[in-house]
Image (cartoon, helix red, strand yellow):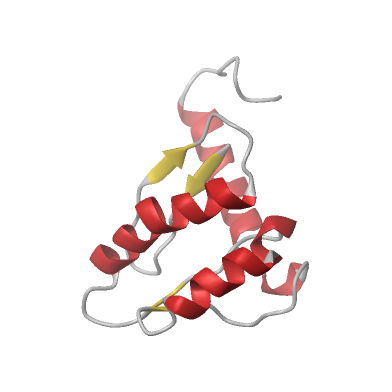
Length: 111
């Protein structure tokens, strides 16, 4: 699984995840990866974190993490599983297409 960061006017890092993501693991990723990245990318102001439509983003444990860090990172209370508000899927499609056009096919990417 690839977890990209897509700031509005710059590019964030791509974090590759090799294991299955549980709510505890995702909270660890938020604390150890996402929070520090957002502090760097949005040092002059408040960043907005929008997850994709994964059900894990609606878990109460994770919602409480966002509540604890609301003063640093905004997490809009958008409806879960709303395709109209999810910008990540189309951007990942564009990224995947660009990678496929630039590099030979990788055995780890489905065709």
